[in-house]
Every structure is written in structure tokens, then in C-alpha cells.
Image (cartoon, rainbow, N blue to C red; front, side, top):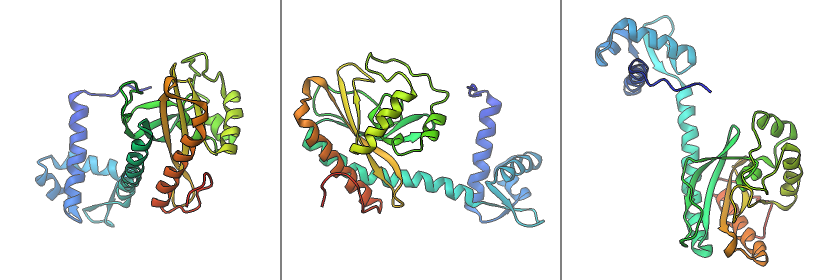
Length: 265
């Protein structure tokens, strides 16, 4: 993995790039001379940065002129962030409702390369609870969210995703390899929810269900975590049903109305 360069030159370059982007955002099209005056940078430096940004597709040059504009690639980038904002806002309502009902820890997570990332969370009302933070990355193979995000992907994709991952044994319950995981993913597809049976942490159980986008694609998962001392096997069906209902409502909020699991009206 490459080390992040925090040298003054590197940081200065990042600041210059964002200075150029901001100036381009404030004016529809602008030339090198005017841009260099506005952000107090030499013309040669501005030109060099613009050419790199043009090669990367973030900036367009208007024909053969000296004028530059922002491309739609930045709009797409912003759109992705907005997509998560919508998801978090819609999920927040349902997560607060479910948090009041169950009093347990809830997480909203999504797939990012070979990890699951927490986008939002509601803490348990109890003192004994799971500690985590938004933005934290967790393994796919030992978490309910990871399993639910992978369960409907083709086997080849799951294998490729985990090809460079070492299956660390967090507890004696952690799955040992991708073959064991694939067996469990088939079960997840059949029942519509995933479980973490003390696979990440001793004394902690977790249940997770899928959330669908308007296009019917699984884009996130919703999970409930609780300590073993508060978990009773006879409550499992009820907890999963409540998770399914919340996930169905979140999916509906995103424009998907055919949630395939649970009995929700």
C-alpha cells in the first residue's frame, strides 16, 4: 500500500488544484491568464495543472480557445455523495424508530472494495453495548453487513473481491475461508438476512438485512447488534422481522417498492 505524501510540496499541490476547481466553479469559463491572476499563481503552473485535470477528465478546454470549464465528471462525483446523503437521511428516520423499539445498536453500512464501511449508526440505550464509529471499516467475511452485501453477488465476484484478503480468526467462530463463506452466503440468500455469531467479537451477536436502490440493486445493509447476555433465540424472528420492515421502508424511500422479505404493508 502506498504511503500518503504529506510533504509541503504535495499539500501545496492539492491546495492549488482545489483553488483552480473553486475558481472554475464560480465562473462558467475562464482563461489561463485570468485564472492565474485570480488565484495568484504563475501562468505556467496553472496551465500545467489544467492540462493534468483535463487528462483526468475533470476539466474541459473549449475548442482551440484558451478557455476552460468544469466537466460533468465532477457532477457525477457529487451525485455519488448526494446518493449517500439521501440514503442516510431516509435511513435515519427508520433507524431512530427501530432504536426506540429495540434499544439496541443499529448500523447502516455499504460495500467498499474488500470492506464494509459504516455510514450511519444509532447507539444502544444500554451501557453494555457495541462500540463503533461512522467511517469504520470492517471485514466482509466476519460481519452480518458484509455477508448481506455479498450474498447476491456472483461467486466469481465474491472470490475476486476476497482474493487478497487474509481470513483473520477474530474468535474461534470466525469463518476460515472463502468456501465456508460461500456456503453461508447461500443460506443468507434463502432466508433474507445474515448473521454474525460471535465471529467478530466474543459475546456479540448481529443480524443484517439488505437495502435496495430504486433500480433494485442492493446498495446498503441495515444491522442490529446486541450482547449475548441480552439475546434470546426465541426473539430472533421478531428482531429480523423488525429489521426487514425498516429496510423495506428505507428501500421504498429510495424508490424501490418490491422488498422481497418480511411481511410489511
